[in-house]
Length: 172
View 1 (cartoon, rainbow, N blue to C red):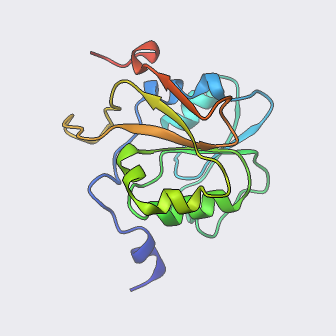
View 2: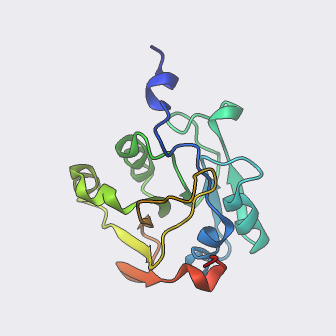
């Protein structure tokens, strides 16, 4: 079995995409003048579209373009922002934290029940941007059984922020 098969084995929620309102909810927490790297995103990703639409500089990469998150890094970026695959969360966060830069990764809140985030964020304090509603990921059948939040480091003005996705256009 090759590395790509091990690291990118899809789980039940790996090919689900972030709706625009979930990205818009992050925008008030992003600073101008920085370059945002979206490492799991194609040009058509809502992360790329919404960040650029808000006037941010964005670089994006994707495994389908031969840019493996575990080995690829763009030449210049300041903040890592994306919705990573939910499979292999610990490895993704380990790599993201290894850069020592601010980050915001959208992830299921149930992951807090695992020991991995406790170990990974032991030395770099975890910040959470949480929502009252669940994100309805595109590509799922609207039977979302989990809440999601942005797991951040070095980005938010306080450790936990609670917001409503309805402020950003989430339907019903």
